[in-house]
Length: 187
Image (cartoon, rainbow, N blue to C red):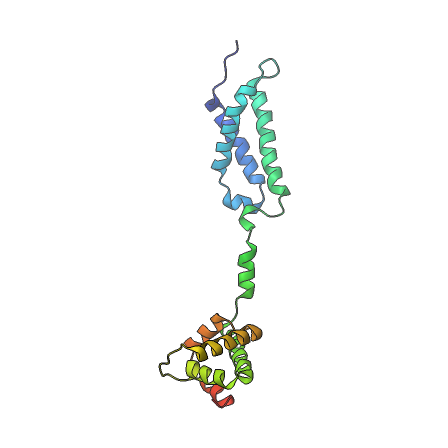
């Protein structure tokens, strides 16, 4: 019966092959992959290979050398065949968010233009309500049948002209547009 080899005795071989493999990696994986990880994976691989070694076919050193070489070649192949490395992956949502982020000036222009269009086609009760909601500082109570009719008309027009809740909040927070719109629309 042949004695099973001790895995720790082959640490130097694993380290040499792991460092050689790490140097061959593309720059991106090399940035985030630590050589110690390759060494640890190699040691685990050697530990698994001990059970597969057949003494009548080769010495353990030859068997481990060939097996490790193939193991690290598979790691290199995996990194060179990937279109992008793991560190370069960017989610589509974040790209779309960055592309769709709007400059505050553009946002104000869109919101004011949409509001102007809504006011131009609004019924007289809706125009009065918009004046109360957005152009006066007095406190107003909003309830009753008249309010619900005006609210429904406003929702339809907002949807038609692309005036969103965010646009309304933006306009309520920024004061610069109020005087100009009030003068333009005789409010």
